[in-house]
Figure: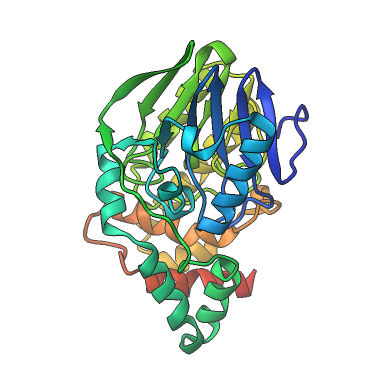
Amino acid sequence: MSERWNYRKGLIETGDGIFAWLQPDGGWGWSNAGLVVDGSESLLVDTLFDARLTREMLSSMADAAGVKVDEIGSLVNTHANGDHTHGNGLCANAEVIASAASAREMEAFSAEMMQGFLDAAPSMGETGEYIQAIFGSFDFNDVAEKLPTRTFSGELQLQVGGKNVRLTEVGPAHTGGDVLVHVPEDRTVFTGDILFVNGTPIMWAGPVDNWIRACDLIIEMDAEAIVPGHGPITDAHGVRKVQEYLNYVNGEARKRFDAGLSVRDAAHDISLADYESWGDAERIVVNVNTLYREYDAGRGTTDTVELFDLMAEIKRNH
């Protein structure tokens, strides 16, 4: 965490026309977003998990930055997860930009699926209680979805007034199509969920080496303000901590895979003592499962309910 900016809910101006929207505590669904403004032009980086939260953010941006929602010209989604996309439709006039891989993922996963997950939770015992605890604050019946209207692969250069904005696809890593949003002249990068700061990263896609390389790229950008997908604004030190976690979990999972341990047993067995202050430690389940699938395509599960069963179990026991 960088001590330069307080970690509080709301809009933080990190530079001339550069803003971060922060949502402590940064746990499940409590994501960050960003705004780039120059003259009469603006670009929004991500929306939030439901329309209510996104409306609140957009209202604050109109008040503090003078950017009305119908004036937002571009909206970049850093990846496909709903806590970064479910307010897209509120920006009716914006061109919605994402990687082609993210666009495909957005088509496959909807808010209705999340609401169905919550609706089923009361019949799922302790796993259902866990699901309600992490997702119950969000209203998946009140969303404003809008799929990308422009996609790219690799890199894309945008102009916001006089500001250059560089989009760099670094996925698959956290998801299938993660993108970094870099404003070089203002030494700012919005990382999406390539960075979780003071919270446990979750690797839905992998491979892990892509994610580790993405961290190297962020460090090479030499940004003063690094806005993560979740958690406080950080600096290179915060990036290295995420990288260290990924390297550690990769090494520990590999040893247990080679020894023949199941995903469940490996997730219970790996010590997270060095990361015990981070939230959502139970995500080790998803990380081990994804790594196991990387090591051997025939191993591990893609059953979301099974993964949440295991995460609920880890949460109860640690």
